[in-house]
Image 1 (cartoon, rainbow, N blue to C red):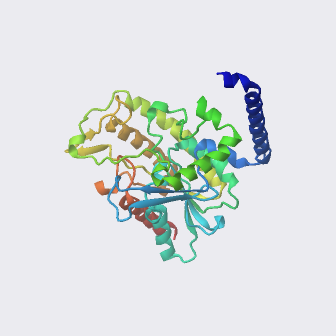
Image 2 (image 1 turned 60 degrees about the vertical axis):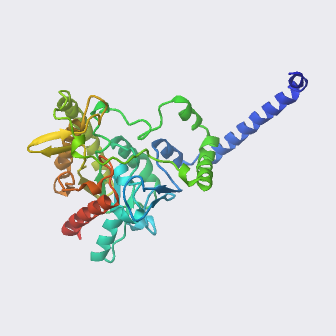
Length: 360
């Protein structure tokens, strides 16, 4: 205590000097980034210039034990030589992102391989899926993200969406923490500082170099359902009404998204979303309990996703690929909606066949 009293002035000078130093650095970074339009994308969880490695042994059986995940300087996951080569752009949430699927097995890679077999002048397929994004996040992508990517002029835009819109409990609000981080709180406050924004990628990179198991993750876990898991037989009485409201909100946003696609002179391809939360046996539907909270089961989720899929058919017509009614196997999914490597390859083959039969 006596040491503190004797050195109070020194401690005060050091503290003030440190704060002034931090303030100067913050001001300097803000000046440097005053024209950095990319800053806004950080609030929508769009990753850029990242490289992670995920051990996928615990998710599903695979000959490749590690899934390498990279996003380039524009936030895209692809193997394109340049932006001008992007012939197909894919948009969606985690089922498009496929973070736990090795790159060469993603449905984008399969589509690219197949189309190059029939058209040697074909460019490439780029993945703009963002984990957790719903139609709110997709709208943000068109309004704020894609305009930052120079020479982005795809011929086709694949919209594999709906998985994160099926939660009818929040029909008219973004999915905070995924579509947007702007919800206040200490985390949002800290990330408003340029110093934190600058140091955070360095911190993540350092962690990965020290311990590869510390890489960020999306919280997925393996869940292979058996017939015994499907115990619910009744739909919640509120689900039809809530799903209708949700579908109307979804349709309005989808119309805007399609307008954005046409603004890019691209052709939209809509993909319906399959799921493993409900099954039909002997004309009776059975669902997994507690899919959307304790009140709503897989039957409720399935009802909701079918409403959204109907919107896709309505708006996209013949340019709709129906994955919902495809006969997938259990080996194609590691949970209710996310695909294994085999599942992603299956989806890639289906979409590629559609594209070849209609456009190539």
